[in-house]
Image 1: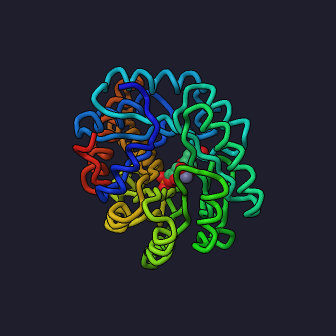
Image 2: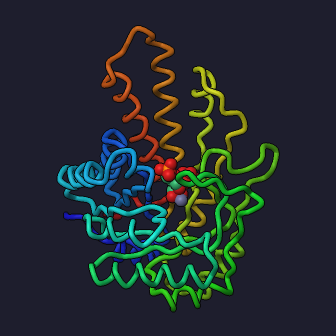
Image 3: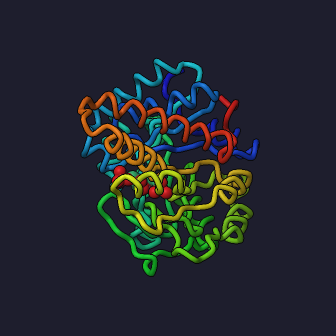
Length: 312
Ligand code: G3H
Ligand code: 13P
Ligand code: ZN
């Protein structure tokens, strides 16, 4: 199967009460770890590329890595998506350059400017057979090189969503209900709780419309411990409880973004490897277990959190 858009995936996910995993890719080992798990679990998948990933690995390398994964995994549908597109030009470059889906993140603009920018991207994308994700509400945390403090974050206002979707023509909408980017999502000692009341209000206003959750890593404590026991220092790293993500997936949420968890798995595995084998210096020797652990983590997400295994 060639690269596809997320249109059919989201329709099935909405009706089936599950979500598609959207995993960020930056290099070959991450692409392989994710897609090998999806192939074995027969799960559709969204591989997403941020502005930072394009700056790090180069657009063409990333597109070719994803195309290689499509050839290796012909049984599963794969979407190539721009994560947090910052402006029209970046979205256009990805639409022209082989992506099947883009996000235009106008969430830092005024409501009016967000609508104007998103509409412009939608018009260009739809004319080229590409789908668009917009965003309303602001997540806390680090996104590319922009840091948003918890005080400056804001939940999505349900009363704005109908106007935003109808005026822009977006295909899916990212909302803010308490998730945040990075590995420090909640203060230690507090009870992590997503705002399901906001999600339910939004989904009543937009029946059948696919909702997206960013900042949805769960920050597995086994990898935080592995990092801390092998020279790292990540005290108080806390993520979104997986049962809350599972609940969101059973509701209107059709796409769940996970990046930090894969970074933790890769970093923890490599730190442990170096600690146990200080004499080794062949990158293949430490990237191999890192890739294997990414694969097992993605398998766990597909089966126990997203519920999209067997849906390809
Ligand atoms: O939301 C941001 C994603 O985790 C991508 O992170 O900008 O460091 O590539 P990045
Ligand atoms: P995490 O930092 O929780 O993995 O979120 C990733 C994300 O939202 C990518 O857009
Ligand atoms: Zn995000």
